Length: 347
Image 1: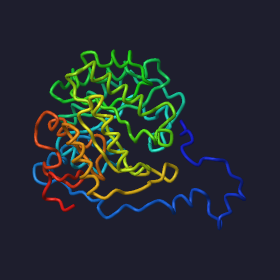
Image 2: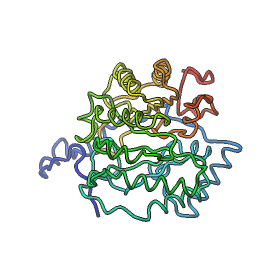
Image 3: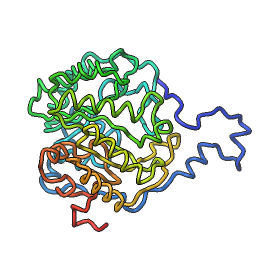
Image 4: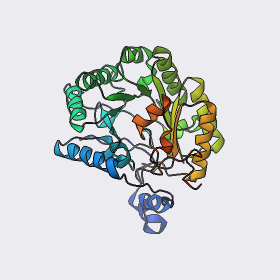
């Protein structure tokens, strides 16, 4: 069984050290300091046709024993996305070769071999779920020469071959900055959106992300993807609450726009466990609305900003927004994303 590499505060302590500080271990002390969720962490459930679609999708998932990031990561927006025919799947394994301090995915230096049947199994799962839009996300595979690019490509091609009407979005790793691998991956790949998350502002790279990742390297991947495939929508995501300032969020968005990123999501970082990075702050909904406004002013074609927003939030609808459709934040809003465009929400 694989074990997770150290994340934070994993030093070895003697029993006397552990029993000090009034008899409490360091883990217990971190647990006590963990911030409570503020009152605005609420979302509404779908109703009517949306509820029917959600129930149908959920039944398909459980009947066929399918696995989605939506359920396994306990995403707060699973009702919203499934009700609109969107789901997220993770490929290339269940563990990652990197140990980012915000991430709940397990870490191992040498993961198991890739499953050669995964492309077929993924395609069958998406067909059975009867969805209209799928986000395919990946774990880092630094153990492979191409970072997993060939396997990612096989999975997406097989899904498109079996369900050509399903819109596809690839949420990709940085491939260790391997532009040749990225070129091979994106060559005529039948996707609508290429996404890669910068995760945090540049100053926090060394604190938040694995040493092999950086804002600069992420920008290089996003920029090259845009040059290779100008027909694709390019997307990224930023977490807040990791120690950044409001101005740094704006500066990060400006850097993303400079390399051609057109779609952006901003959401609250939530600490997966007491062993991960603690939450620095909970910006209020009004601040997320301010970032939404700024992002639109900077020229982003599609924006989702809010405490409960995750990188694949309403992915299908966000793609439609980037194509000129109504903003996702005003379409049957559940409260996850906030914006001054939505006059029904008090900020």
